[in-house]
Length: 92
Image 1 (spheres, rainbow, N blue to C red):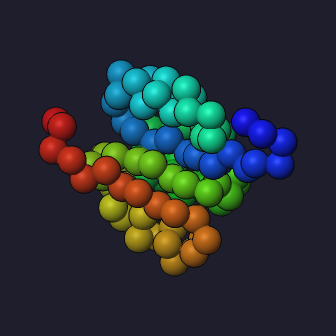
Image 2 (tube, rainbow, N blue to C red):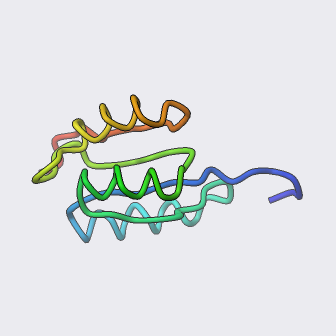
Protein backbone atom coordinates (compact mmCIF):
# COMPACT_ATOMS: atom_id res chain seq x y z
CA UNK A 1 0.00 0.00 0.00
CA UNK A 2 1.38 3.45 -0.89
CA UNK A 3 2.55 5.62 2.02
CA UNK A 4 -0.20 7.73 3.48
CA UNK A 5 -3.05 5.43 2.43
CA UNK A 6 -5.21 4.38 5.32
CA UNK A 7 -6.25 0.77 5.85
CA UNK A 8 -9.87 0.05 6.78
CA UNK A 9 -9.73 -0.97 10.44
CA UNK A 10 -12.19 -3.85 10.69
CA UNK A 11 -13.80 -5.93 13.44
CA UNK A 12 -14.90 -9.43 12.46
CA UNK A 13 -17.65 -10.97 14.60
CA UNK A 14 -19.16 -14.44 14.15
CA UNK A 15 -20.08 -17.29 16.48
CA UNK A 16 -19.09 -19.93 13.90
CA UNK A 17 -15.33 -20.51 14.18
CA UNK A 18 -14.94 -21.94 10.66
CA UNK A 19 -16.70 -18.98 9.04
CA UNK A 20 -14.70 -16.53 11.18
CA UNK A 21 -11.43 -18.12 10.03
CA UNK A 22 -12.53 -18.04 6.39
CA UNK A 23 -13.66 -14.40 6.42
CA UNK A 24 -10.54 -13.27 8.29
CA UNK A 25 -8.28 -15.11 5.81
CA UNK A 26 -10.09 -13.37 2.96
CA UNK A 27 -9.95 -9.93 4.60
CA UNK A 28 -6.28 -10.24 5.56
CA UNK A 29 -5.42 -10.73 1.86
CA UNK A 30 -6.93 -7.35 1.00
CA UNK A 31 -4.23 -4.68 1.07
CA UNK A 32 -6.56 -1.93 2.22
CA UNK A 33 -8.14 -3.90 5.09
CA UNK A 34 -6.75 -4.62 8.57
CA UNK A 35 -8.63 -7.00 10.89
CA UNK A 36 -7.92 -5.36 14.25
CA UNK A 37 -10.05 -7.59 16.50
CA UNK A 38 -12.33 -10.63 16.41
CA UNK A 39 -15.31 -11.60 18.52
CA UNK A 40 -17.91 -14.33 18.83
CA UNK A 41 -21.10 -12.52 19.89
CA UNK A 42 -23.08 -9.33 19.61
CA UNK A 43 -21.91 -8.49 23.11
CA UNK A 44 -18.30 -8.86 21.91
CA UNK A 45 -19.08 -6.61 18.94
CA UNK A 46 -20.28 -3.78 21.17
CA UNK A 47 -17.40 -4.10 23.65
CA UNK A 48 -14.70 -4.40 20.97
CA UNK A 49 -16.13 -1.54 18.92
CA UNK A 50 -15.97 0.76 21.94
CA UNK A 51 -12.43 -0.40 22.73
CA UNK A 52 -10.97 -0.25 19.20
CA UNK A 53 -13.30 2.27 17.44
CA UNK A 54 -12.95 0.57 14.03
CA UNK A 55 -13.92 1.93 10.63
CA UNK A 56 -16.04 -1.15 9.88
CA UNK A 57 -17.76 -3.92 11.85
CA UNK A 58 -18.64 -7.07 9.89
CA UNK A 59 -20.76 -9.54 11.84
CA UNK A 60 -23.22 -12.36 11.64
CA UNK A 61 -26.80 -11.20 12.02
CA UNK A 62 -27.87 -14.36 13.82
CA UNK A 63 -25.96 -15.07 17.01
CA UNK A 64 -27.07 -16.28 20.42
CA UNK A 65 -27.51 -13.86 23.31
CA UNK A 66 -27.25 -10.45 21.60
CA UNK A 67 -27.81 -10.83 17.85
CA UNK A 68 -25.81 -9.01 15.23
CA UNK A 69 -28.86 -6.96 14.35
CA UNK A 70 -29.32 -5.86 17.97
CA UNK A 71 -25.62 -5.03 18.25
CA UNK A 72 -25.75 -3.11 14.97
CA UNK A 73 -28.68 -1.04 16.18
CA UNK A 74 -26.82 -0.23 19.41
CA UNK A 75 -23.55 0.59 17.66
CA UNK A 76 -25.11 2.90 15.10
CA UNK A 77 -26.50 4.94 17.99
CA UNK A 78 -23.38 4.89 20.16
CA UNK A 79 -20.66 5.12 17.47
CA UNK A 80 -22.24 6.90 14.51
CA UNK A 81 -18.92 7.15 12.62
CA UNK A 82 -18.50 3.38 12.48
CA UNK A 83 -19.94 1.49 9.50
CA UNK A 84 -21.79 -1.60 10.76
CA UNK A 85 -22.74 -4.42 8.40
CA UNK A 86 -24.66 -7.26 10.01
CA UNK A 87 -24.71 -10.23 7.64
CA UNK A 88 -28.32 -11.33 7.40
CA UNK A 89 -27.69 -14.17 4.97
CA UNK A 90 -29.32 -17.52 5.49
CA UNK A 91 -26.12 -19.55 5.43
CA UNK A 92 -27.16 -21.74 8.38
